[in-house]
Length: 209
Image 1 (tube, rainbow, N blue to C red):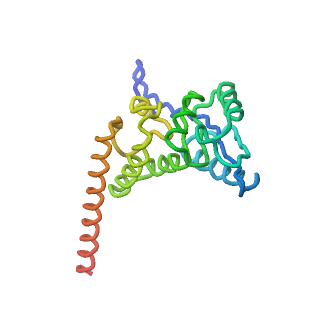
Image 2: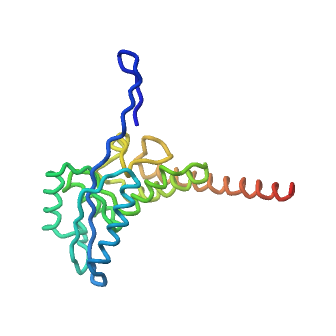
Image 3: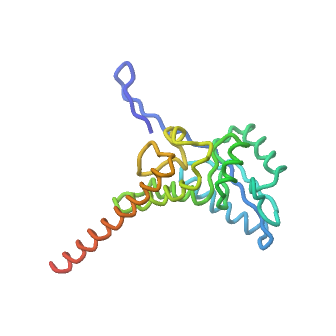
């Protein structure tokens, strides 16, 4: 939420904008529609936990996901039309998307696209309290981000915030691969250091007892 003073000195509190989401799932050969709807219900709960308001669901039966856009061109066109009509802010896929699929879909739908992993990392990020938890989440986010650096939504978009854009790390995420790899290396070392400190604290507590 945003808190600021109005011109007459009154404290104004505004709530964060609730993002409208649409959920997408693919019914694979070894699945049935009921099973996928159960997965989407779980995804809907995750989306709500992250602060989104799920507006609709799209499912499609496919022998295998489309290598370029995950769903077929016809279903993607339906999705684009729905997004425009309902003013959707974010599309959430129940399955993990490859970097190229993510990029291609975003280019078509003209809004933010997340997969299940990105959504879960976002929820973890908002709930991480300890330095250990925050470092773990930040490391996971950078590892997730590294192969996806060519996405439409860059670090400039991340500054605006929103689901999938949050984390305990820097507000402006670097998009240079070398810098990202260096950051991952530093975070891994930081985690090991925190682990050693925690182990020492546990050992000292044991001696006191």
